[in-house]
Image (tube, rainbow, N blue to C red; front, side):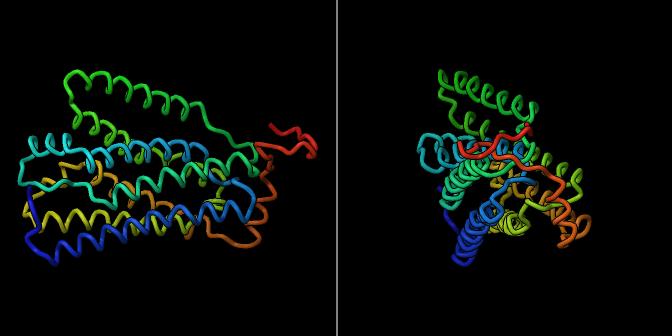
Length: 274
């Protein structure tokens, strides 16, 4: 198994990885806190949340399997060479676990806070169902031949696809509302930092090993970083350039959006909103 050639690059790799972990992990909290303070999830797209949950669940399966399974690690080395390093680090597994938990909690907030007329779209439901069905079919195919590396690569591909499309509903929603109220920019700034450092981490490993195998051997992580950077820059442009927040505009946006709790208390009067 390959080892690091430079202790300095190894330390840099670990530092980049853990900073990216904390940055990406903390990026979930601004949205959770914003929802809590507003007691509302109006402005947060539900399709984004569902697709995000599918994405992070798939990424957790890939990272945990690659990191903990000797069988999958052996299959990886047989395919890419025994001198190559496993492209998944402990911080990748930790981040994925934390991401699934925080995304689930945000979905819980959708159930208890005001949501206006927002709901999960039929398109999102179809996409999520198709992804789950595809994963089951691939599991059935992989079992007889023990093609576990191929199977987890499917989950890696799923997370790449979900990353590519999960931001689109939120970006469109911001455009239609002409506002980013309810969508935390703190989430985006931390997400961008994590994406840059995640890509830098792979670059450091490539320099040390004098090979690009880790970039295409874990193409999911490579594409993930590029997609994150692209969409985060788009949201930053929306927030600060296209729809800059101001008190008057914020109040007007909130007043125009009717809000209805998804779960009502028995004492609350019934609303005609759907």
